[in-house]
Length: 278
Image (cartoon, rainbow, N blue to C red; front, top):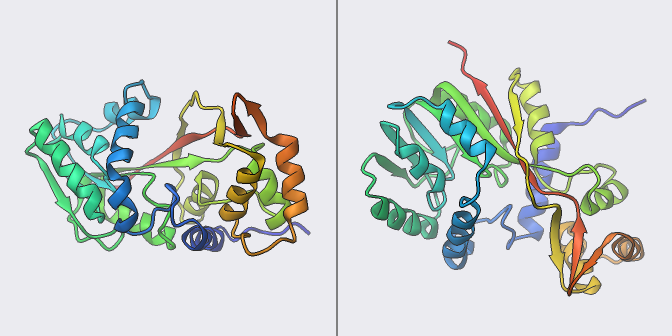
């Protein structure tokens, strides 16, 4: 008999794994102490990425109506917030990290944007009024209760909700390791889990996949550092029972490129969006 996946429980379990074992991970950054040393580097990376066209960015910007209102959950240093502020009546940027807000305020000042309100509480507990749109880009990974995260989004939106979330590679190195060790292919909260939860909530959302020119997951400078990385990602640093398997997996699948060892498995995002029933 086929086992039925409890998607809500799986999301929570993977959030807890990330929180416990990857306190330095971009995907689950934890509290503002992490961003204290990373916010400006993050801002620089985002600005470099945004120098190139992006189908998700174009679609969202063309979909939201001018002179409307929007909540940007996990606004970070403000790339999406400032994009929306160019044509919208008001944008509410929800950002709990003080380090991120510091850079966000600098970017708002530089852009001379006067229609942005900043809320310092964490979603879904943030106290905000209803807006036309609610948007979240990669800000859901550390929320254990994804159902509550989405429920609050729908409560605060009158027109549409958007979720931009990491979509896993089906044949990636980390995916293969998870299947072997955890009997399921997911190493972190992602699109597959999120979309199945949405279906269980009765939300039949639309999806657009971002085309990425990055055809690898991450890279390491040696097979030894790759072994440490994958064990850290999977919470296995204090265990050695899977070392032989992981060593063989890495030796078999890592791609040597110049002085780096590339993890196969593309990185792209999925834009999930759904209209709010009148």
